[in-house]
Image (cartoon, rainbow, N blue to C red; front, side, top):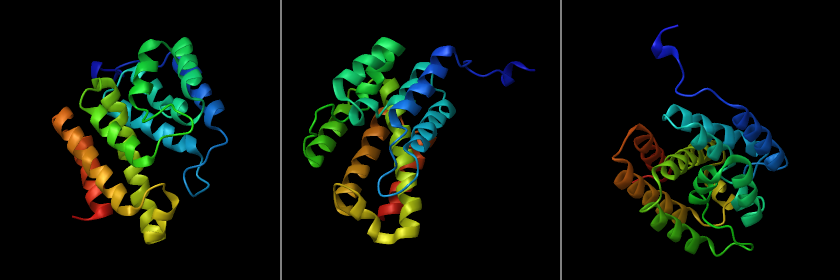
Length: 195
């Protein structure tokens, strides 16, 4: 085996524990408006993080990035920190638009989240970018089947979604100096919403 064939990191027992934790936390969830297990999204985001050169902490955070926001708020985030370390918990927090229950209004959360990206850590930016890329790809695939009926699944209409994803593209371009995943996100957004 050549040096180039060696992975950047070898999954540890902590990574295996994170996979089990993600499965147990999100097992009963499905993607919006469908029957696709929510775990498909978490595994896809983790895969994209690894493809982008992410560390084990970033990959674990990718598996758990929605756990605080959707499955328990602050107590869940504290549990993640206790099990997987403060760095993983910080990345998860950096990818969450709120831990409040009930959640604030959609537009406020998304506006605040885009503003947060200006100062987010590089680790949180990587996980957030891969999350948004997978979400956009999933929406584009679903739109190809469902057409504009897709937008009824979401908490905001098509135009608000389009504005949000375009703002995300601008934020990632500014912070990540472009890169292939930023280009893929923005191309998918344009394909989905048009110019």
